[in-house]
Amino acid sequence: MPKVLDKFKGMIKKEVGDGFIQLKLPKHIAIVTKGKTLWAKKHNIPIEEAYQKSFSLIRSIVMNAIRLNIPIITFYLLSTNMIESEKYSIMMDQTKEFFDDIVRDFIKVNKVKISVIGKWYDLPGRVVDSIKTALDLTKDNEEFFLNLAINYDGQEEIVDAVKLIARQIKAGKLDADSIDIGLIKENTYSSYFIPPDLIIVNGPTKMTNGLLLWDSPKSQIYFTNKLWPDFDKVEFMDAIKEYQKGV
Figure 1 (cartoon, rainbow, N blue to C red):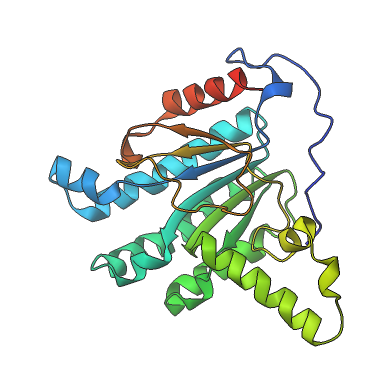
Figure 2: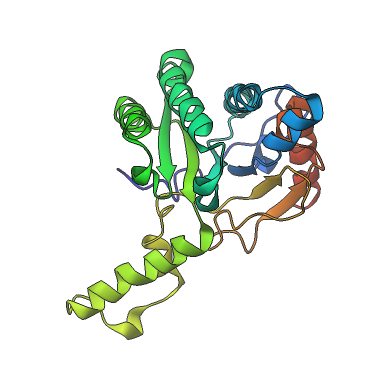
């Protein structure tokens, strides 16, 4: 996989449909999707419908990102602690269906490459197979990048990066004095992508839940104060406008 860390430098300034200036658009937006269970309880509907709504929103947001020429978008879908949830089986069924659908729907047409960060290979086989298919069918796409954090933990990402570096030192392939910020980045799950310019956080708590923990010290953070299924295009645009005020 070719690296895309510097792929999006030198963007041309131009006006786009919603009055944004292209030069001031974030190149990478990360979104924390919290509040699905609370939303289902609030509306007294099955949790399956909340997850269906969630995945439909992801499709919609990706299409808006493509329209605005925002090349990278990351969604935090499933943390490691969700593995113990009583809704785990439902989440897995919905996740499998999502990966099956996005390949059929628009991913290939819009030249989007799918990447999955986290320990997704520990998920049930049916889900892993669908993820592998999506990764394979989109591996040659290089215009837009959809990252999905699944069975992910930001601290574990850094720990795993340190372990990889330690193995290189033990094997005599690396000197400890050569360790720097860039080297740690190269060994993270998200080594191929620039850090997020903007992190959008949904849900009742004002926490990023450790999404892209190593990459986010300079990211702007926008709290929606909404449960994820209530997120929409208007809120997405408001987050971008707020980001533009600070650049």
